Amino acid sequence: MFDQTYLVKGMTCGGCVKSVTNAIQHADPSAKVSVELEGGKVSVHSILSDDAIRTAVEDAGFNYEGLAA
Ligand SMILES: [Cu+2]
Image 1 (cartoon, protein in one colour):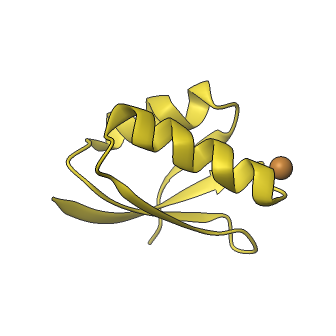
Image 2: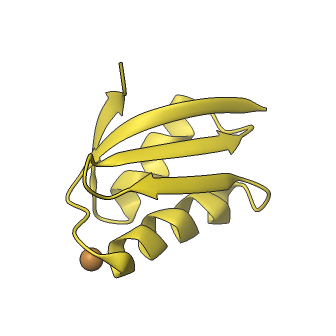
């Protein structure tokens, strides 16, 4: 399991948080996801690769900006 934080642009409300969370959990049902809306940060605890996270985020309609520093 990895803990990573990603920068994601385009999330504006609780619905967006749900969409991103669902998309990631669709790829890995045991993923733990927490979103910090204000900073546009998505923290993920899962087996998913960065690429898999990117795909999930983009398929949900948001902009994946890479790993948070
Ligand atoms: Cu929203």
